[in-house]
Amino acid sequence: MRIVRKSDSRLMRFLSFLMFWNQTFMSGFYTTIGRTIYVPDPNDLSVEVLAHEYVHYYDSRRVWGPLWSVLYLFPQVLAPLGLLGLLGLANSWLYLLFILSFAAFPWPAPWRYHYEMRGYRMSLLVIFLKGGEWAARGSARAILPWFTTGAYYWMWPFKSCVLQDLDDWVSLIASGVDLGSPYDEVRGFLSAT
Image 1 (cartoon, rainbow, N blue to C red):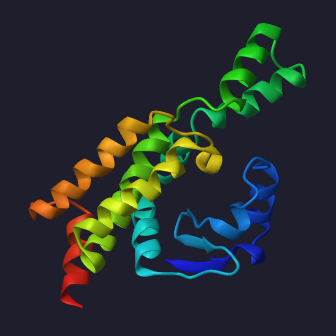
Image 2: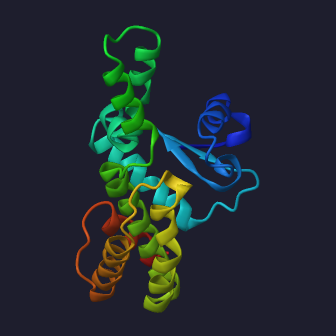
């Protein structure tokens, strides 16, 4: 994997322009695409952040990168289809309105929820290993807004569901059971250092 500052990347500056609703995309979010982690300026790259981003890399390799990207960006990835209608490439205004309204508004994004939950589970594991169960439970509440606000385009507005998932995960970590890949590998590596 490699690390690149967002300010040095044309792609990240372009994505920042497209993501007008997220004014802190360049300064407050780490973004992983393929083998590259794009870091904000300034950044405080930590083990927690690297481990979280590693899960995204791991998942994109496990679920064939292009498919993973479409799943992660669904349903907003459909917005370009609506633009085809604007260009006259679609016959129906109903089609255009359907695609634009479905893709451009903050609908729940189940796959983004799934993959971000996997990343934040790794974050909670690292926090647990560094600070214990209470630190992880407190962090679970701090993570909640990432799922339910515009930070990730309102990916999952069901707060109680998100909090239950995070709390259940902390309970699993605390029980000491095997967590599966890539969590057990990272837990083993961090426990050995």
